[in-house]
Length: 211
Image (tube, rainbow, N blue to C red; front, side, top):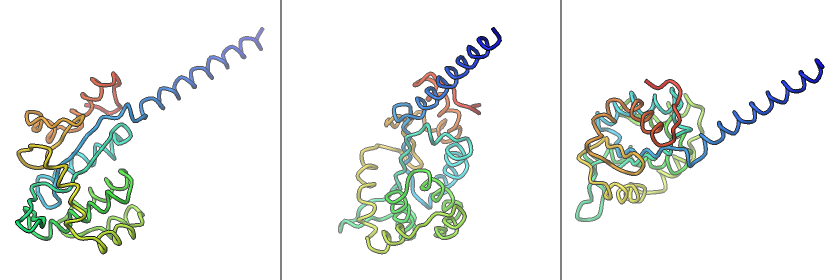
């Protein structure tokens, strides 16, 4: 009798564990990821503050990244001059840094990209080597990208994507591929709380450590 009870309890534990695993797998599938798109530029003080104090901590410290389809668009308020060259709001140095960010995004997964870019945006100089060493990421492919390609070439696609959004300035955040100007204040000042609320509304799942 005791053996029978033990076997029943064991089977119940196995079923519960399998269910938990299925639930965990479900919430990390692509269909259960909330799309977040950030339009930004590397030397904008407001962009630097948002990435380093809101987006980065939310994605990496509170571990929202597995639940996010995150896209970073490093173009900001840049324009094309009459010759088709990219002109950035904060000058050539910003265009150069935007291009470095573009190479990172094109050659690394989103986790490494967020780590490197958030780290780099803590300063106004190129901190790629320092940040790569800190996170132990090989960035030789990033350096080859930047060395072999022009700013115009690297940023061309980001310029096209930015042109599709009628934003009023950067940083600008789109949720589920929709940019809503009326949501920007809350998104930029309370990003993690808004992310949690939108995720729960969309998927009926309450994420951990949500305020």
